[in-house]
Structure formats: C-alpha cells, structure tokens
Length: 67
Image (cartoon, rainbow, N blue to C red; front, side):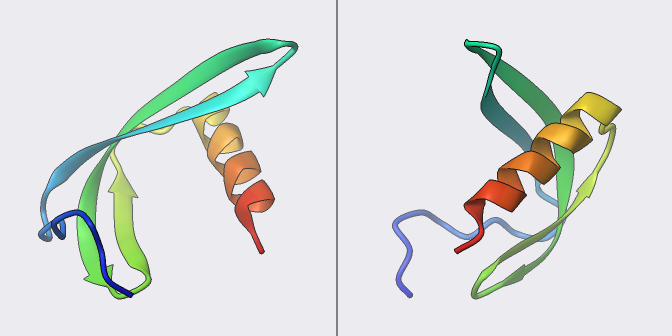
C-alpha cells in the first residue's frame, strides 16, 4: 500500500487527537505519544499521559473503526 505521507521515524513525538460525538457535541481528546516502531500496516505508539477519558475515547474509536 502506497502512502501519501512520510513515515514517522522511531522516537518521533506525535500528538493524537480524537474527535468523538458526545451528547450532540464534538469532544476532542488529545494525547502525546512516542513512536516505538513502524510496520507496513501502522505504528506502535507509547503514550506519555493518557487519562481515563482519553483511553475510553481511543478504545471507542478503535472499536468502531474495525472492518
């Protein structure tokens, strides 16, 4: 699969933003992470500070994104 964006190198700092509709409003959960590894199908991230709300938002996002 070709990519339109450059690969992130290991040890790159990234910011993950997830926007989820909650009670009719969009709530943005934000977290910082460190790229641990890169594979053809994605990245391995280590989160610096992931609060419970952010973890729940990420879990909900990943659950709904499954094929």
